[in-house]
Image 1 (cartoon, rainbow, N blue to C red):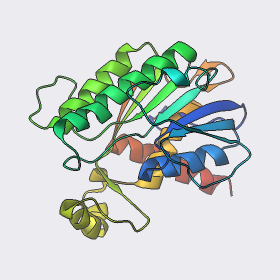
Image 2 (cartoon, rainbow, N blue to C red; image 1 turned 180 degrees about the vertical axis):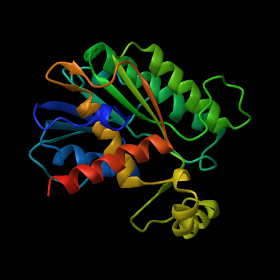
Image 3 (spheres, rainbow, N blue to C red; image 1 turned 45 degrees about the vertical axis):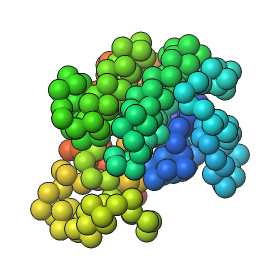
Length: 249
């Protein structure tokens, strides 16, 4: 069985999902895929601002202080999976704030989720080069690695660590800096020459939702334990989706 086949989404069943950071680029797509998924019967969005969308499956919870998620304990009770897309860009905040958002917020949210829904699966938006050893000279890599280690130690039955390379925005936006403007312009070339170094934001979001929805079917585990999904693994999941949709036509 291939990697992609091991996490195929079931077509039956009802799941309760929570999406964190749904106002962001990847989180915005994640909330859409979660709402559209027939195996999901409720989606809770937790963030600092309203999404401006309406859906019978959607419950929005506004929460300003992710350094303390204790107030979310009731909201997070009975959840089957979490898709955590909260983050920020390197250089857009101070080093202390980067650590706070990348590590402290992740650890605090996972603490409350684990207490309220110990059986939940956790899908985490990490990043290419994340360094669990803490030896990297790049703060982003060290902090993402630190967050990964904390999630793996939290006790969730399934933790999926997504490490995308360059995430292509798909929809027009104001790029955070010159480097991202350059990467967006070069994406058509990179997609052909270096396909395992790029991923579309919508494809990444679909994969993050896919694993937490599809990690079980009829009580049997598709995937045992935890997974680190590098860019090529994410692309493999997306490819399996395209093949499945084509075969089902």
